[in-house]
Length: 406
Image 1 (tube, rainbow, N blue to C red):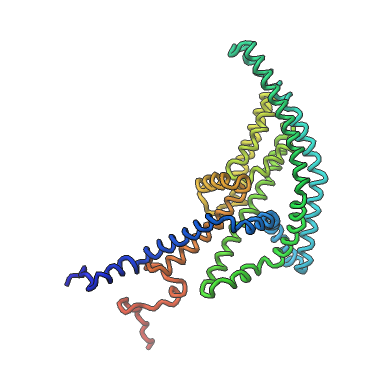
Image 2: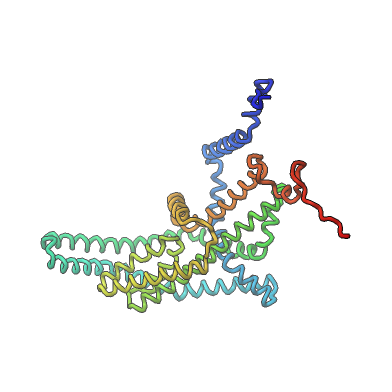
């Protein structure tokens, strides 16, 4: 008997091979999804109220979310170890956070502002020092004529003088723009603590609450997916903030030891920039290298040594100890995520792109596992419920039963 015998009807052959094919159904669903996305893009004006609402609410939610992952372990510690009630523990955490932020703004910000203004005002002097060193090198090696060197000197000095003044006036105008849009900041400052309070209070109940809109058969899987997302994001945010704080301390201490100007300002710049994986510390090194090169060759060597010490401590001690491999992402993947997120969303995308991709990765993996179990394209993968209740097939040999004891 020929096992490749054609069906009796041509329509049934077409139905079995194309219409009732799982891959065809998948492609059809994907096409319909892309069609819906195309329709939304073509009618993007209809979503303007939604985007405006997101633009207003997103800053408060992002700030509250970051502070939630920082304060949640502290709140749980007060509840479990110190036996403080939940509401009082949250209030203590919020009061301490506000007090620390006010202390930073009242003591650290004015000092950093003065150092920033001093650095901007020193740009022409930096340019003169650079040109003086170039003059000395040119006298030894005769690279350029005196006329060309004087022209370059004049242009560089004029450039840095204008840039320094433009940067200072641009900063002041930016402050003026912030003042004119103070209502947005007020909304964020008022809303963020309220959102943070309810996150700390009801954060553990959030998965159960949102799972009510999910069909009953998929609720357990959905809750597990949310828990995995929460673990990824929390470990990344806490780890990155801890590493950034350590980097700030290391750079500030190292620059202070070698006597580099603006050590605290350069350390404060290096800490937040370290939130950008792989590129942050290198970007923060550039102003330190310039100041070190202008000061003296020994100071430049000291800056390089401080950076090498920080790099060894961060890559070999801090990141493995604090971060580990919580994201389970290849470094090349992180680099491409940073490039794409930075191109699409700017600095915000660079900072939030990696945890956002981690959340998306958990969602895609969970969806793919569900598809493996229920699509019938992967017969070796059984649904969770069936895997726990499978019975041996008639063709499979039954396990031998032990003989009764005599």
